[in-house]
Structures are given as C-alpha cells and as structure tokens.
Image 1 (tube, rainbow, N blue to C red):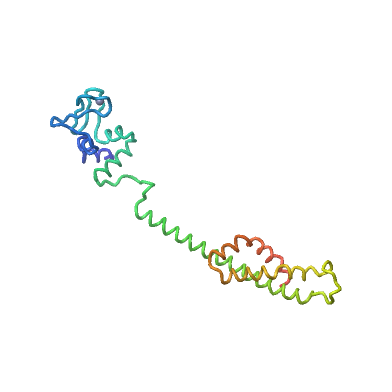
Image 2 (cartoon, rainbow, N blue to C red):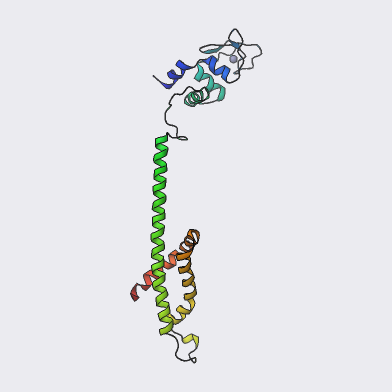
Length: 206
Ligand SMILES: [Zn+2]
C-alpha cells in the first residue's frame, strides 16, 4: 500500500479542506479555491469536485494543488498538519534519531581526532623550538666575536641568527607551553610552516 493510500484511509478531502480554513456549508459545498468562484460550486466529502472548473481529487491532491506542492510533499504536509502520525520515507532535513545520533557520534570522534592531531603538532613544535633554542644559546656563546674590533658584517652567521631569533623563539615557546588554546592555535597557524622548516634544518646538529 502506498503512502497515498495510507493517507486516503485516514483523512478525507473534507478534513483537509476545512483544516486549511475553507468554509464548507451544510450541503458539503464550498467556494472553489482553484477558480474565481462566487457561489459554492465545489462539492467536498471523501474527495473534492468542482462543478465549475472540474478540479477533482482526494485530500493529498487538494493539498498539492492548493499549496503548489509535489504529491509526496503534500502527503507529508497532511501527515504533519493533521497529526496523522505516519512514518513517511526518509527526510534529509530531519533524519530519524538513530541517524542523527550516528552523525553526532561521528562529529564527536572527528573533533577528538582534530584535538589529538593538534596536540601532536603542538608537542612537535615545542620539541623543535626547544632544541633550536638550545642551539641558539650555544651559537650565541660560541660564535660571539672575541673583540669589539670585529665589525658586525664579519660576525658569524650563527651568532647573527642567535641575536635575531632568540627573543621570538622564547616568545613562541612561551605561547605554545602556557598560552590558551587560541594562542597556541595562532602560533601554529602563523609559524607552523617555519617551525617545520627549522626542524628539518636543525636535524644536522643532533
Ligand atoms: Zn473550481
């Protein structure tokens, strides 16, 4: 049995027509909403039939034509508006609870994965920056010019790098270790690629 049969068994055209506010008189007649009807020329009972324009059908047809809906949408609307309580097909806009539950579960798992991935990235970044930080300190000590006579153009590039980078590396380490999530995310978004490159580069100093 189709959904349309199910509906037909439960509601009449009369139920639908009156539900949507069209007045039906004692003889079961109403003014037809499908043509410019001055005197009631539509007969409404199990089905509806207009003697003026020939409009004709059951409850679902009426709703489909009256609201300009497809038959299945009309059936769903009737089912809902008149509280018929049929389970009609799958509605993508409101999936049944089990589906909804599965979707939420998946979302949660995905979120957990993202958080886990983020923590791995953050730990990696902290490891790299800590190592780099140690290196910079070593370079700063080791390559410091012995006399003030050496012009900065002749400074060892490692010493220059140490002077240039130490503050930033300190700050990034601080943010990644003690900053809140947003701060950490900020650092990884802005410096992630650079930190990765530093990691590759300092492997040779292990
Ligand atoms: Zn009519």
